[in-house]
Amino acid sequence: MGPGVRSDHVMCGLFFTHVPPSLSWVVPARLDHGPGNEAGFAAGRLDQSEMLGMQPPLPPEAVRELVSSCLHRDPVAADLRCSLFVAAAQSYKRDSLLRPFPPRYTSGDIKDFEGLLADVNSLPGVRDLVRLRPSEGDHHLALIHWILSSKSFAVKTLQKDEYAKLCKLTENEGISAPVPDFLFELEYSDHLNTRFEKMREGRDVFYAFHGSRLENFHSIIHNGLHCHLNKNSVFGEGTYLTSDLSMAVLYSPHSSGWRESILGPQLSCVALCEIIDHPDVKCQVKKKDSDTIDRQRSRAKNSEGGDVPQKYFIVTNNQLLRVKYLLVYSQGKHLARHSHSRSWLLRHHFAIMMSLYLLLLIFIGALNSTSFVSFWNRLFR
Image (cartoon, rainbow, N blue to C red):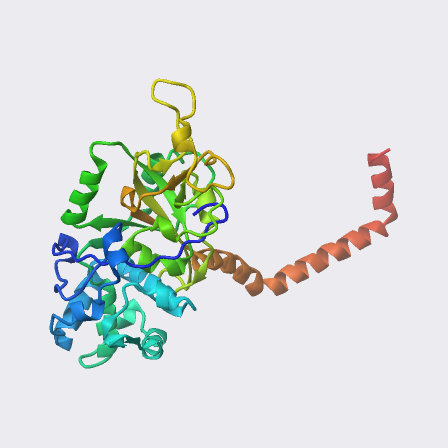
């Protein structure tokens, strides 16, 4: 995210064997892709359908029970993951954005986008999914089960009062910025946490925001942010982040998500990322024990615009950052507030018009009254 930057996200193959406790119901029948595995990317994408094919499909009754359990445990987080998937599926760039891609819609190397979109467009909402009777909507439940399954991370809904704590992480406290309607935290597997700490090597960690279109976030949460995919980078190559939320929101326009979503059909999403304070993170920082700017860290490779601006960070190594929180804005929520005000006016428009009409008659009558005109002249003489 940053001036003149566009991000596309593709996957790097990586298989994890640990299941976070909050997703202990997930059967290990799926391949996940973690951030920063350039070796897997360079060697070619793993055939995900083959990996997933190693496990026999679960019976519909088991899928129904697992999905129902997840939806009851955290329906808002489940709804978010469905919304991100649907946004990617509905995009004209769906072939590159749906990484990972549901294997039940593949036949060899051919992806059945038509069949997938048919199921996506008829997908019932969370409230309706939990009410489905036996044998109803098995294909929809199978798709939801795949969307919610992950062995590398879990998504957890946070209370809105946690927003103040997140502002402190980025020194955004007191700065005017739009307050998100929903907050989520990504909890990573022990394997990923260990790898991140190993990469950290005792260095400090700080936080910054990354804005991107809603359709990109299905891939972002699965595969991470990849610096080499950013194009038209004015200040150099890398993943752009900022400590200013109001700037990040500009790169996250409201887009169509899942029309049955309890979050709303039009969403905007901003990622709050953990970043390791490493020389490969370019920013305006002073040298140790000095008041002068460290020029080695203030300019990224192939920069056309000079030094990295204040409040911006350019990460040139994928393994130095990961998404930790998601801030979601719902256009439906704000429209509902405005529509409530409009609905009151519509319900009482006749009384309002009559009141204005009576006031107009009183005003005209007063102007035609000699007593009122005489009083008015004495008052302002």
